[in-house]
Image (cartoon, rainbow, N blue to C red; front, top):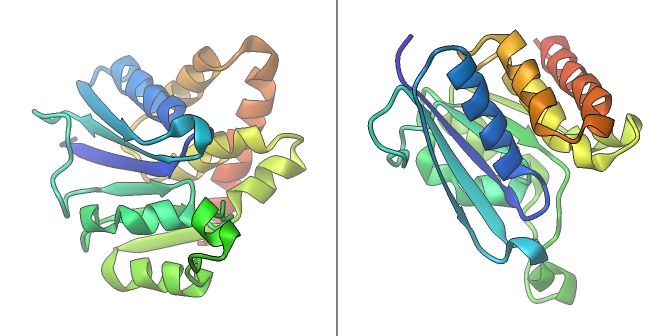
Length: 195
């Protein structure tokens, strides 16, 4: 199957680390080797969180330009991780912004969403941009945004869907398992309906 490099970019509290753990667990269930690494700022205060998940690779960090799949849980954070994408990269982008303090104070300007999307469309193989947070909210909890994103990514990842769903259900509290399973399915359908 070959190496698979997945970068997840978001802010603290969005579940980027949970997503990377689910993907890693699914890779192990599929009999593949997985390495991961995470970098995060002030995660409790909405700081940047970036996780590298490498399947069948030899080192835990994705080289610049070598990302196969970029999961942007937050648009500005995805843009900050753009140096990892290349012409072969598939981008799954949540278009729901979480404004940083500098923007809320009026000290900064948040980029225009069309500009963020078009930036990735120019440089990547495929860009799928949708409001995953709104999809999760329609199911009853924005906390399931990462599961919506995971469902959308399931068409791109070279992992068995059953392994992804099993790993997801194992990784969340039992009381939220059905919500996360539904979120996964809605994310999957969102991507399919865009094709």
